[in-house]
Image (cartoon, rainbow, N blue to C red; front, top):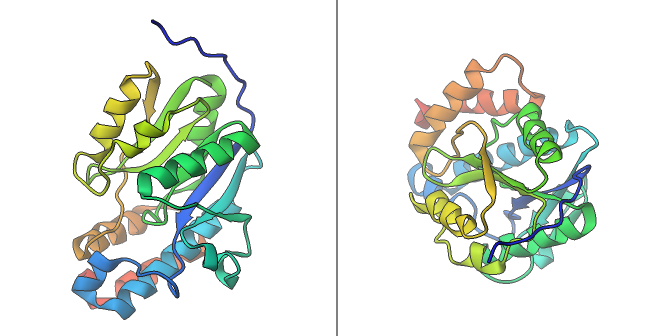
Length: 234
């Protein structure tokens, strides 16, 4: 039986930025295995700052929020510049579902991302939002070069099983998610491929990406300066 959907007009979209509070949870553990915990935490904090500036530079139609991994982290000073809420319990699939539904309920459509791609630009997120305005029954995906995804956006109901039947942090993560979405007969629009940062080799590619960008946010410039000073990025 064909799935019948009510077409909703997408005017505003809630952006949920998944983040961890470094004082409460380990961050960038795979990177830390190569460059040490202190350096990895420095990178994480600079990435968070870059993503926050990105969020603050977005047009009013995109409403950013921190989606915090720890309930105890909500009062942390780092998260006070944006609206913020707890992701809820469960594994990553369950949390993605919970945040997606929460933002859809309050804004009509949801956009999800993390803090692992600090090179992203406001224009890229605005392109995702504009596509949903024109195609409200579509899903917008930003593929990562490692087989995952850096952005997910949509304004339609998605069963929790679509999120929880995916194995994350695998080279096939995006392929698995697309397979789940395929059961819903949704149009999928892909943004340009980007990278995220998990291991030390990713720092080199990130430095090249930032250095090639003509217009950087001040926090992205700060991150690029850090990468240029860090011997492990050469």
